[in-house]
Image (cartoon, rainbow, N blue to C red):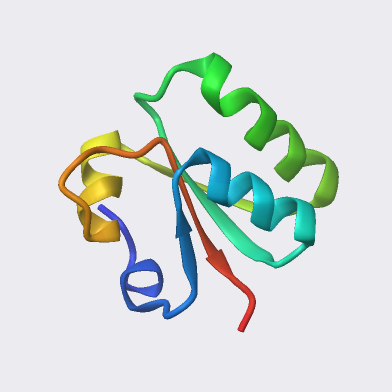
Length: 83
């Protein structure tokens, strides 16, 4: 289950491309990744988090992460941005 920090965050990204852009800009506080997402999709995000010391939090399913983001489909990645 997702923590309340993510659900109440005002600034966040949803999806791979938006999260990658935010990571490149250096505006990400922490990244949420779905455990059931395909490894080749997550690999660049996980590597970026590892090399730039960005906190990574795992979520059980893409559907759960999508619901927390307020969308009707699952998503592999989401992030909370710096205020």
